[in-house]
Amino acid sequence: MDGGSGDMTLAVELAALKRLAHPDAVFSDARQWSEYVGVISEKPTYVVTNFCRKHRIRQDFFSGPRGREESLTNVKQQFDTGRHVFVGTSEGDEALAESVGWEYLPVGDAAEAAGWELGEPEPPSSVEQDDDRDDWP
Image 1 (cartoon, rainbow, N blue to C red):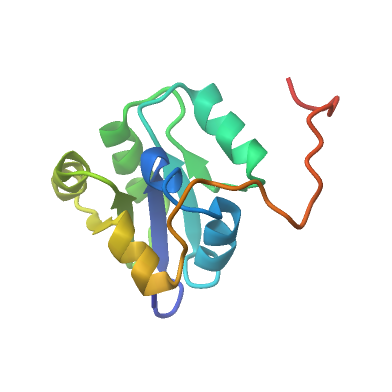
Image 2 (cartoon, helix red, strand yellow):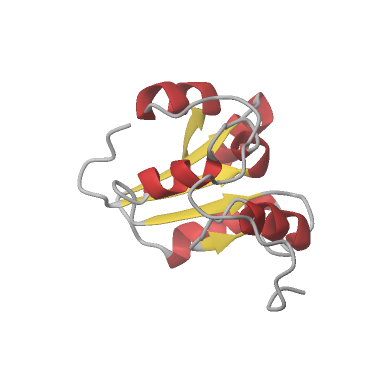
């Protein structure tokens, strides 16, 4: 995927992220051509946080306790980039993106354009998983 100068904010729906084999690599790759990258979801904050922690994903923003529409609106206001792209999985995601002035990209199209592998998310292989960490609640 060619984001040009990096003047882009990329939001990925959690459901779309769960369709990618290497979500950590997706975020690392997206940082090369996006200024800001984050996760949007209707799920509770702890669900998003746990998924991101497990996959070693550092996000610039996330939905938090807000709904997706409010989150996308707030992110667009907070991160003033030339493009705002929302990667999702459904017609509902596409309608949401349109309603808040974001470009929409289905996860399959995004994966094909960026060279991301679709499949069940795998834990990052470069770092040993440490489920007994004391610094996480």
